[in-house]
Length: 248
Image (tube, rainbow, N blue to C red; front, side, top):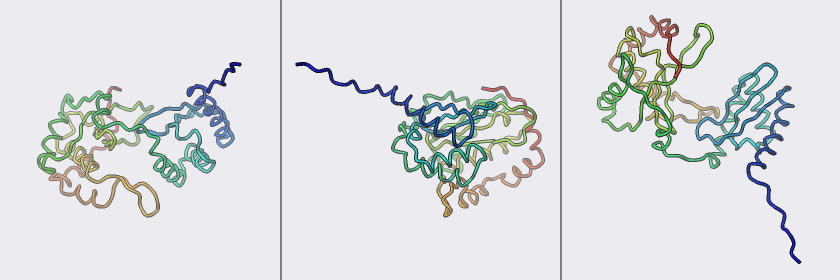
């Protein structure tokens, strides 16, 4: 007699089941409606936003079977930005890096639209000259103007640059591409982000992630116009905060 073997559930169906379980687990901790989207990103492991009575979370699939203490930390981080919860989440992500799909920096950069040439400042040219002057052209990274974040009302702060260790890409805020922003100031911001390629983020003694180790801050002072750039920032921060940029 022939007997039909049971059919194993499809992977996508299993993910849907686990996602619903995760939503129920988070619902009790966030005390509200929760909608979870599962992804397989290689860099950002979690993002969230509040839409009235609904919490929307985008989580890496490593969180599908997270233990209770991690979900409690996730809820505390989402609700009130708890720094201790953030540190616990960082440790959990670090322990589960094996589940993060690995791509080479070159593969990641192929997915990005790099736009280093602005109307007033050519980032590629600035990067090349700084690389030659300070690093003997040893830094292997790419540079671009980043997208302009959408903000409602006047800005209260601005992140002028960032560095992704995974893709080795430096992003500069488009607000710096103005005729009134001096070249030496843009150079300083680019130089700072290049130092992140040299001095990687690490764990401090308290277990928290340190992205500006003392040696990076000390090395930054070697920039030829360091004091001049600091003074310009103090006197002209409002110019950057009020800059009108087109979202990319």
